[in-house]
Image (cartoon, rainbow, N blue to C red; front, side):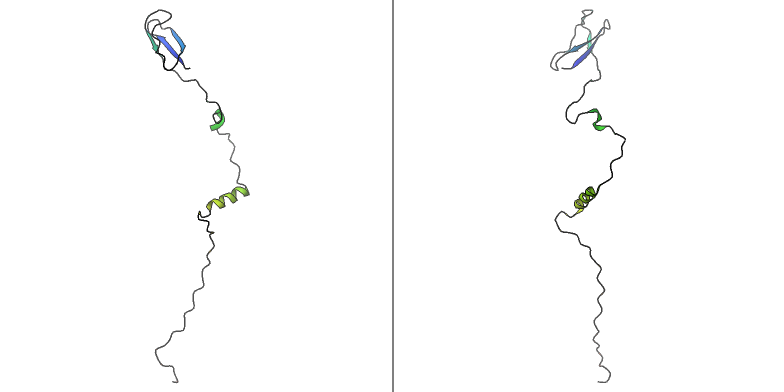
Length: 111
């Protein structure tokens, strides 16, 4: 249950009260008996505990990340492989085709 802070606007008395969310706010001051209490806005004081909720989870340790190992490099290479399972091969440039001898339309000499 949350702790709420109240202050009396008549006598300036301050108090804290443990109340449920559904409880109505206090109105009557226990010090002077007047209906002059107002709820104060205060900082929430809670800690998230349990798996994954620690103060150190998001703090930088100042250490540099470790260099990639050979296994990490291999995993990275696998991640870059095409999704369809087809291996990429190197394509070598083909040698230019030699032109076929041109058939001449003129008769050969000596014919």
